Image (cartoon, rainbow, N blue to C red; front, side):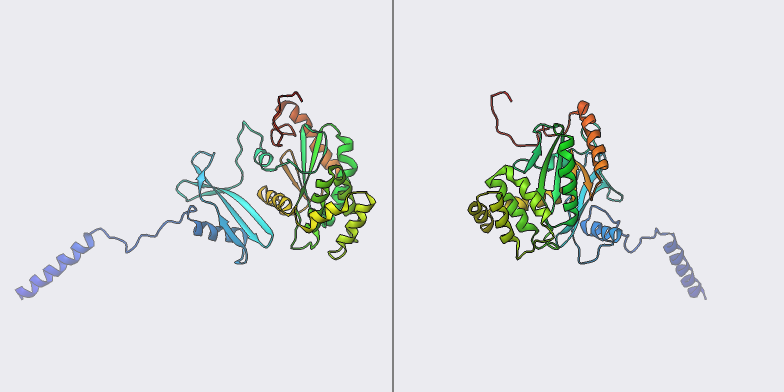
Length: 314
């Protein structure tokens, strides 16, 4: 009996001792972090309802201008379409903010102003104007045709000294089969005779409904003859794809500043996607003209156009 009692006592002590010991979980759950790219991708796919067909690329985290935050860019792409979003991630990786950050000391559209290269692009209007309008367009796009008519009828006629407009190619090849050849031909015309580019621009949009991939070259030859533009030089340029890289760079530039549809305008860096009425655009341009009288942080004289250095006065 005594042996049995001791045994029972030892068992009781062992049980009570085990209960008193601190309990250690088998495995602590690992905290998720937005700084982990697979975690970020999974979260963003759910956020935007992006299926597996959409490729997702995520930039490495970099220090942000926002105190205490890291910055990451998430880009979804499929075919020729893409969408880029900026996320600000807390340094512990637990929280994220989607959006843009602004520096009170700079133009809110400075990143677009810096990214849109106007050097060697077809232009119209006054050099050095306080307002730059960058036009990302597709020659086969019906909406671009309507906007082109509006711009050509009103923009420079109304703001002859205040606006400089630049044409930027953004052919959407996935849905427009002759848009890129037309963009390349436009660049070839520009190389041959810069002043005739706008004649070409107007002609393509006017004849848009008649043009097909098969008929484009013959119709182009007719245009060149009608406008007395040296056809051999333009056609050789087109056949040799001499301007393909120009068009590719323009398209890539558009992607970099968030263009994902045409037409898209930038007025001193301010993005305006889709068709605008002339009264709407006129009001925006008038506002920018007035703003630049004191701000002086945008326009054709902002340092974003490549010029050759010279000691001669301008």
